[in-house]
Length: 195
Ligand SMILES: [Zn+2]
Image (cartoon, rainbow, N blue to C red; front, side, top):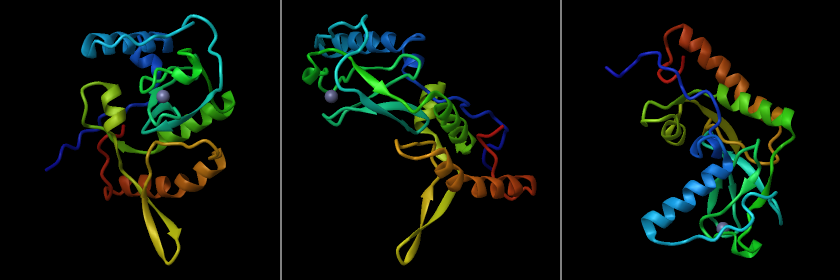
């Protein structure tokens, strides 16, 4: 017997502010302090309290979390309400150690993308906090994608790539979610992790 209680899944997209006492800059400061404490490395951050400057990075959603990638291949949490990016892989050295701006989809679209991704059921039983749960969440549904000769089975994760439209998300998930809900009602699908 598995655990089959109707626990509630994380119902928001995690951002930098959830790691930084309510602000993206708070997250940047906290990370800087943590690196200093744990590794003895003092990361220089210039103009943190000013508007970010330089080439913007592009935000994406990875496993229920807003992140942005740096050219150095590292990534950092970001927040749509405070679009500022500091990479702790390279310290934004190529940007003169200054934080960079972040591009997000337009506000309406951003909210709709988040809403649709949160409809995707996940098993997020593992983890002690919402932040751990979001990162460790396992997809419940798999979707069949026609890939050459054989159909591919891809997990319906709470991830979004720049360029994916709201329409694309509907195409990916509406039918599998409808089917899953029907099976839940009939007692054929597992419901754990979902209210
Ligand atoms: Zn970097």
